[in-house]
Length: 87
Image (cartoon, rainbow, N blue to C red; front, side, top):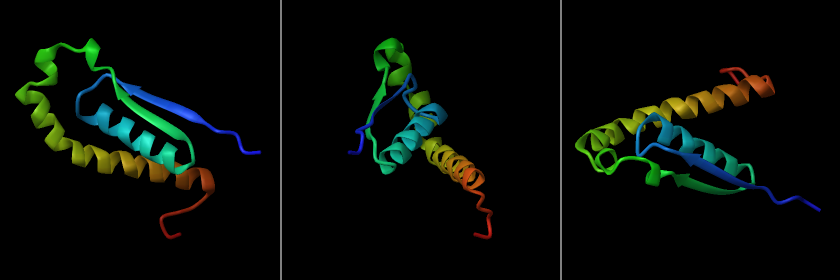
């Protein structure tokens, strides 16, 4: 009988690299069959940071960070399975 796996991915970042990395981890963990909860610990951040223009600017850069994080995940998976870029 398969075992059910529940995973919580928690981060304390409204946007940017940490948030993007958490999203990628959650996405790939879910694809592997786990039940995933992605949560931001926003209650521990100052409100000025959460809603600031700087945070919005960081979110616009998150797409590039997400692409980089996905490359890292793919590279790690390829290394573990012995695949190369040609495969």
